[in-house]
Length: 85
Image (cartoon, rainbow, N blue to C red; front, side, top):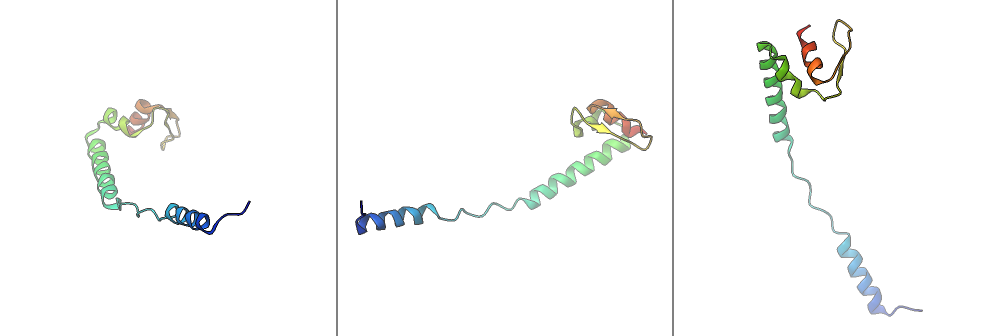
């Protein structure tokens, strides 16, 4: 079965429209930098104040931490308490 020239043209138009480039993603590097700076400031503030329980929010529930003492701490709460070392 042969295609008519109009069918070829229709297929080319459909293919051309399907291959349109997507718009570039929005640059969120400034927002990410602000979020990182805020988290770093919060970490420093909580560490200086000795709020180990509040630091637990930064650890995964299954976190495993090896501090300078080389004792293993498992879980968010125990991992946060390891920062007292």
